[in-house]
Length: 370
Image (cartoon, rainbow, N blue to C red):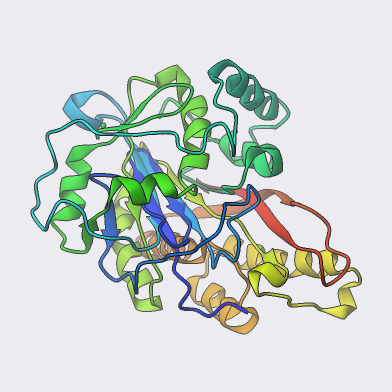
């Protein structure tokens, strides 16, 4: 079973927020920020599994976008939170003037490296989904290989309104720019530190959202920026602190937060095998466990979500980014903002029926403001 100390990650992008995974060695590239409250650098060995990295503790990523990003060029996307990683470029507050590109390191393995083929796949998945919660202010979506979670993630990205910048994040579709202005604002808080390019390219949590981000925003591809932020294993008080910090960006209707998170990682290779016999087959027990957590998230209650994790230790890799998002929502609710969150799809990589099986769960949902 996983303890509450397992590292998790988050990233933020203008107009979009992604929360990334907490696998060892995961993190954003040059210019990316990491929450100083991260407990330690995650380092896991072994080849990545498209369903989720072997024995991964958990993961999550966030992005935000808003109009007027960078040099007055329209919206910006803010990315979410992820796990801890090594500092980069010293402790100064200046960003590097050298243009550095974060390559699509998982293209060709976790998803196709062919732009036309990737575009066709994304269009296919998105065309099968309804826009029931549009425009979303935030979404939660998985970050596994597209073979496993591509169709599930479409339910979240279909709720994105594109009408709503470091260097560069590459995708097979087109490059995404990081918003240096917002980076500067976050850096001045003293709550972040810089991350290495190698750490970022080794991590998959945010990268798995970049093609969907590019596709959802393609009608405004020159008008938004992204803000990657990597976040680690936060305490409840730190989740509240970061929630308060990000709440002002969440309040802006021109921003979108994207939280990258899978749900239960079940099986011996994940060191987690919770089973409620009253639910029947193992996979049904997993679904019941996940949907308990999903229901609490829909209630927008960070305290109840934290208590749920303490009780069941569900291996939701983006639990900390989700906690930050829930605390940001709580801050806005204090000021009278009316919001609701609904999950739109749930899936599992496989159906576990015996103790030798393993699976990763995926869920897609959207936050709307009324």
